[in-house]
Image (cartoon, rainbow, N blue to C red; front, top):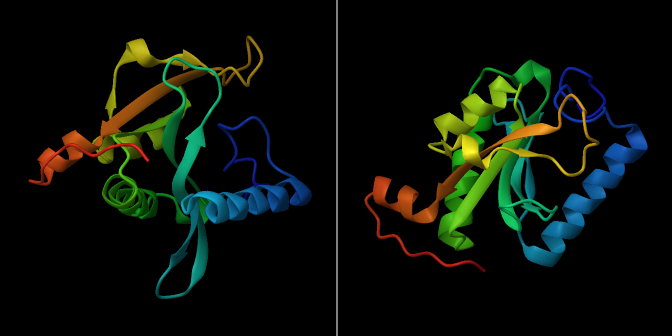
Length: 169
């Protein structure tokens, strides 16, 4: 999945096997240290690995960081089946209900319409004034400009008929 150029189209480059393994190691360390992170997603009926969906810290220098990001990466064969949206809803609930985050963000390159549709289906909002140039990409890079979407625990809680007021952990 991480080596597939189509899956990685809106990321700087596909990952080698060593880079992908190192990424998995970082995910596992993150779970050990904080108790949350990127979860492996499987199709229940077949136990087929789909990809990952979860929360990750956004710590690069930007007007909205530090922040907690909801993100996903799925193998191409599993796109357009609702897996990213379904899993991300569970992740957002966990982030707000169990972990107590006030806000969760998501961001992607401007051209990544598929991920933006997932963000919209999750009830995340976009303000063009929040869009930013990703500081980890060089000036002029085709993916440098990013859109930012946000959702707050209070908004989600009101929509679900629950009281807002969650705090960060």
